[in-house]
Image 1 (cartoon, rainbow, N blue to C red):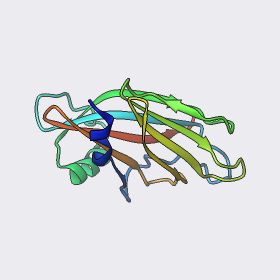
Image 2 (cartoon, rainbow, N blue to C red):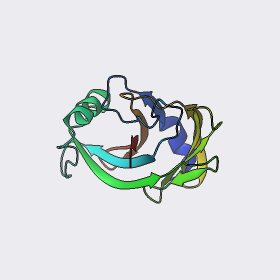
Image 3 (cartoon, rainbow, N blue to C red):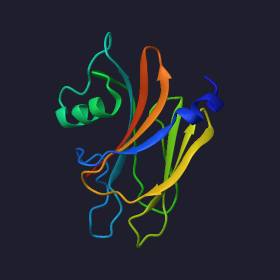
Image 4 (cartoon, helix red, strand yellow):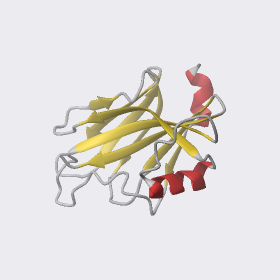
Length: 153
């Protein structure tokens, strides 16, 4: 897979009304406890549906992409407890590096890489109920999708 072909296919979607997919900010000026990056393969048949236990997320993904099944390909967790950058590798193809902008701020800078090549840079302020979903390249008879989530330890 050539990174140059994938860059136009990447799209950052902020799906309002989601399931708390990026609720990392605790509202008290603290950093998230844990950021989880999960890579899914989406298609309509012939894969295990790993979102059966997350109906709201699945419903939102079906509305956004139209696929009925979402199989987890890989998951990686990072713990951004300092200003040093941390990188999540949900599989060998993608990595997402997150770094605090300022210890007093809830904002984070991020960089998404595909096969080591930067394809998307930006910043975000995590807010409960607003997922960050990144549309990846077409894969097989479906689509690859990255979901950035957070959790408290």
